[in-house]
Image 1 (cartoon, rainbow, N blue to C red):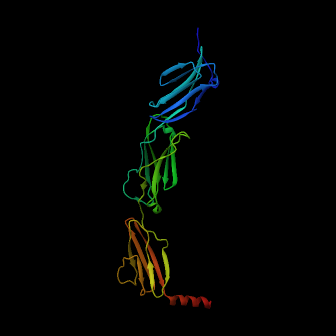
Image 2 (cartoon, rainbow, N blue to C red):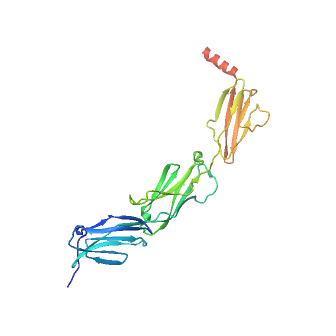
Image 3 (tube, rainbow, N blue to C red):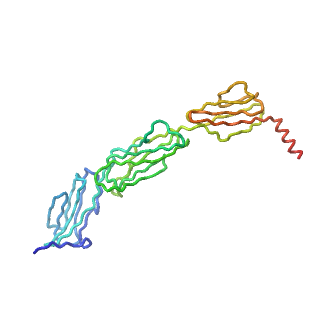
Amino acid sequence: MHCLCLFSFADCPILFSPVDVVVEYGDSFSVNCSSTDKTHQFGLSWEGYDTMENTEEIFRSVDVMDWEMKLTCYMYSNETQCSQNLPVTIYKTPDSVSISIVDHSGPMIEGKQYELQCDVHDVAPVQDLTVKWYKGQTLLNQTTFTEDSKTPVNETTTLLIRPDRADDGAQYRCEAELELGAEGPQYPIKSLEPLSAEVHYKPKHFNSTETIIKNDEVTLNCTVKAKPAPTYTWHSEHLKEEISFSVLQSSTLSPGNYTCTTTNSLGSDSKVFIIKSTGHLMVLNSKACSV
């Protein structure tokens, strides 16, 4: 009776050079198989092809055309054999990376929640893929994948955002990066076109009131940022007609209250300007001095 005796893995004196391979699908690589034990013969097998050679070292050049490729080097002597597999990572960078807003078109509204979607097409291996989300140069989030697939797949990740007025014009993008170590590609694949956020927001004044002491000329500035652009309406018992400018500038404005209402399609906000005369200020000062 004949039996095939196998070395334990730790006892199998096979060496690969390089010790592992990271290669793009369709490319080729070369590998050396040798041993610290010079008394045994060698065989090298891959893709179902076996060869046995009485040599201390085997060199092979391999074309990568099979996602399931397995490269094994084994050594044998009489009825004793051991083998080791060369770690081979076959990768493919994405055909495209794109970003979009889910179920929405047109401007975003301040304070509402939106879902951004990043589509990564035809990438492998997915377990080494990281998708990163950026706003400008700020990293917002990143996603890794637990699937174990050697062949290319499509992946989709999403990001929830709630933009405010400061985000108007912000550039959102996603990047797909294969993290394959020093032997792999060292550059991320970015979304071809970043998503430029257009955010609409209602008028909002920093202060609801402002007191102005009247001198030769009074300027009441109600200008405020809003998108779409707002309209302005002034109300006061001292105004004889409706005024629609953002700034009132006059030397004839009487002391009193002037209310400016700023409005766009998303809402409105009001601010009260209180004009006081210099005479009123002098009366207040004299009362303060007499106390």
